[in-house]
Length: 239
Image (cartoon, rainbow, N blue to C red; front, side, top):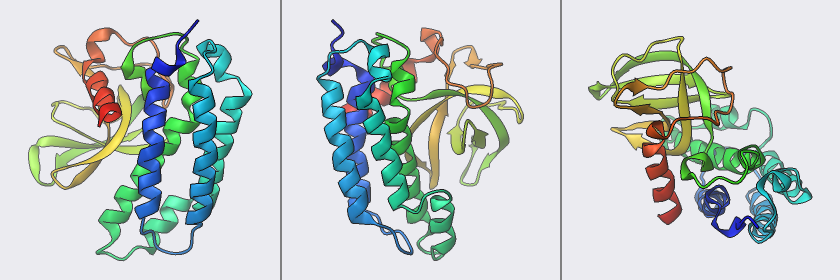
């Protein structure tokens, strides 16, 4: 019997619920949105996830279960309370110049959280695994642009398309525009004033390139490329 109470994918989703709740409670987003409705939907997601955690079902069976459908439904409801399609762009357009940095960070936190919750079934389809790195999405990302970080020329600021556009800041040299690399979607954090939303997978031999389709979930990554992602995931769960 698979112990779902110890599955890192479920544990990270559980931690993400608290992260999202804190974000929604404290968010100061311009314009109208339904905070109360979002928190109500979040409670339903939390209830579904608790049932998932203590289901002890095989991972692939759990991925296609009614519990997962209920969890995904709740994530969609939260998105609806924010305004549905184009919600993030509307909040950014409506923000004042002095508010923009804060609004941008709150949007990134919400996007990360909803992705973790909605795509949990896809990660569970990997089966019974014990690798913490697969608790977050690892996707094929195409580099749209790669420029110097405005505050540190030793860092590269990249715009990466991996199903949606994210910002990745890296200290690895030689990132090539148009190339596809493995990228993990992580909780956003500021690196010298600029928000980074993910991390390229790399090792002593360099970044991990991929020929998989843009945005495709990667499931067969060599262990040597997973070390830093693993550390980030475990830090988030324990933090």
